[in-house]
Image (cartoon, rainbow, N blue to C red; front, side):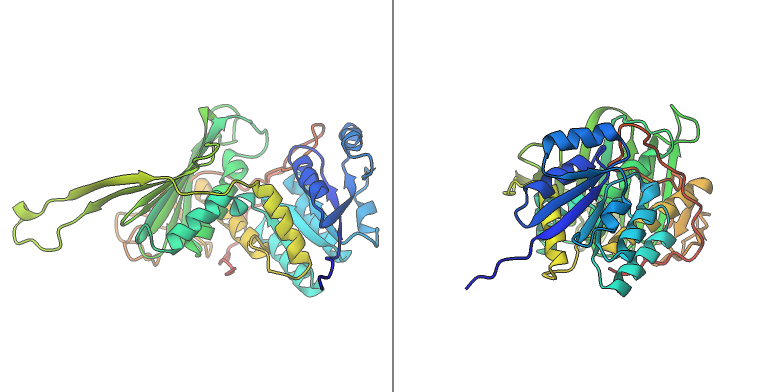
Length: 399
């Protein structure tokens, strides 16, 4: 005999840029009741009321916290409100979903994690690409050893705009790729560096390059730009046997696997016998089931609330991403010097650097500042806030 699942009652704070997408998916779910949406912009609330006449609207987020029938709250506001609103929701006994990035600082993220654990509540961060069927398929291929030993990852997330006035392009775009890279490698970087330039708005980088240095001679590069004529959402994963190209702009063929590699002769007696050989095999496109990542993310949040599983993108992953962004901001202020995740700058002087990767490489590119990213903000009165410089001692918490 089947038992019916408890319907989860949810409220959403933020009906601007990203909030309506969350509202749409939650409204369509049979496993939850979207009870209330909140925004300070009355025009946005009027629009939501026209779309969903049976959903209550309010301009006070306190109304959601004071509702005893509400089980969970989604915070889809500018990042400067994430900590304040998420903390209030957790203190009110509500399971909480926070859009990325989780908070402005690692200290804020840590406090939210500790509060959720103390209250026995779910806290989840909106790293939507972890629910992409293409990313999940890529993870399966890597874990199965089909590409051999993973060597490095290169990510590019570029477009023309949308220019922000008080956050840089790395805080706007890099969290997506950072979360994917951490998911694929299942470890945190040893050090981070970043460089960037401001071309349009003074003191706000619109072009950045981030370098994540991992153990065992592995690394990742993340390029972000608001000054590119073409929208690019591409990641290349290079293995010792094969290579994967993930292109999220492709409607159907998002993954392509290339049977390509460089082979070094195992034995040779003279330098003349030492020759590289380049293997070019077939390329193939693995099957990827089409499904909306945000829909899967909302379903997962509901499953976590019911106690069926632990969050894939939980608070500890959100904390990891924020700390990497903080360290990258420190690197920019130190002219691209690699910054260890313990808060110590890695000196680059041509000598091997003892950063634990076994190859003596601690340098890289860097740029960025400690700004927040405003997801789900209203069309009016939106904005972002520069986050404080992080304090030393940002060792990553294992997820």
